[in-house]
Length: 228
Image (cartoon, rainbow, N blue to C red):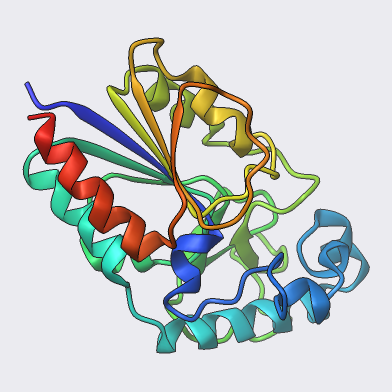
């Protein structure tokens, strides 16, 4: 039976593909108030601003390509049972070839009705503001914003509970509940953290590889194949 790897990925893995993060210097938080463009209250206050913001994110994503970290994760499926749990709303894991992905915070290339019960894949095209879903509500980005429940959280927890190996990559472990997911890993599992920046995590179980995502995954790949 293949060893099970669960990847917990965040904005840092996509930064090397040119996707701006919120937290880094020069990131989106310096240009936008996060509560205005990434919260349910922001949507109700100014839906057109939010709509325009995500149209820009789709336009940016269209120009981006998966990087070597995304590709290595996809390649691991040949020899491991791999599940990717990502906080990212981009499609770079998908395009790299990973086949089992839990998009914890939604998907940028989709739109939905107000209740999120109806979705449409629009790819990288802009959403025309004012477009209505079949139920008469305003189409909105298919994103889990601050102030909203995370519908796939239980699925993610169940995946981590059965992991032999957990890899945390490109996440500051500041956004909850996603930040606590690794704590559900079995006691005998191996946990690796790939991040060049300081991360506020105190668990002695974690082996920290202080490299950017692409370099860290190259190094870790060797370690993983030594376990086979």
